[in-house]
Length: 465
Image 1 (cartoon, rainbow, N blue to C red):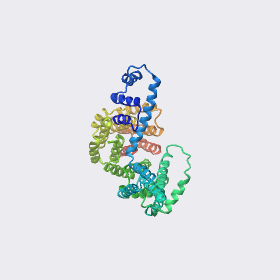
Image 2: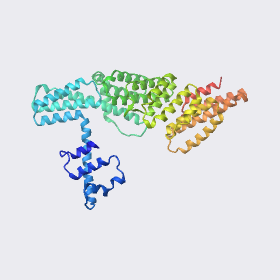
Image 3: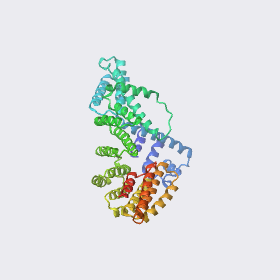
């Protein structure tokens, strides 16, 4: 707000007296832009004391001020784009034929590129633009040492185009599983053939090879493609900027989740390794905070791997890095999950009482955790009541995805049947118990979706003992 006021008062950017006054007024009342302080009549009197209210005049000042604000936001963004500034400076120096200064600025820019190990897509774009500017200078001056820029531009443009094309191809491959798409990427096949036929030409452009191998991984899921893509990625970690790293890690995580959902438990260890690698580099921190859902997913994964000591340390260590509004809820829920894993069921119940269920994900997760706790405590009446109330809860959630709804419904339904068998085992003939268990196991195996399936299978298996 202060910068905008100063911007409005600068005659280089704004000479309109009414706009300057409005910016000053807004600065004075910031951030309380309420009806009491910002009625049009009040604003007008602040700008033009003693004059009769003129809405058309005020509206015009609002329009001019909005335009100035747009320009201010562009200037704010431009101030962060140091590379774009350098390109525009080079263009202006060349146009004005200030060649001595041009060559110094260009030399500094090229030296900075050599010092910078980053090879993200934005870096490739910048280097290509820099080479293009160098070639424009050669065309204008015929300076011999600038002649190579045209050839460099072509190499860099190829790498930038292929990196962007293959990255978008990866995203489209993921989105096809979510939404219908009839986009025909006609040049994609040419891009794939080019990289596949000449991989040695792109080994020094790691982003191209990473997205190429990752696209193969997504198109034809196989452990071999995953291993090749991950190996290329891990070799190039130091050359990629943070945002690029986050994007690529996310693709690998989604692949692991897909394999886990298909029953390949080996990828639990793999996704845990990916999470830990991101934690070490602070890649999961956004705006200074760790997302509560990353926090939950990491705890869930580690507990499934029985890394209970690591989980306890992680929960305590990262609780302070959660956003203040999410901290208490996330901490209690995940600590309850930890206490369940170590068999401290009384603490689970104590913590879940204080979890707020305003978010659907906490509501579902907490109820599922409560169900498992009741089962292990053999609180069968409480379990039955929870299962009945949860069925009604699911029926009321009309907008909940069918897959998720079915997964939770099956968890509660089958757990309730397992509890019925477990409670009645001392009072029924062994043959009846075995027949009921066999039928339950068959139904579990035939179900399309069951959340916490591994836990359920383990508990049903224990009933045979």
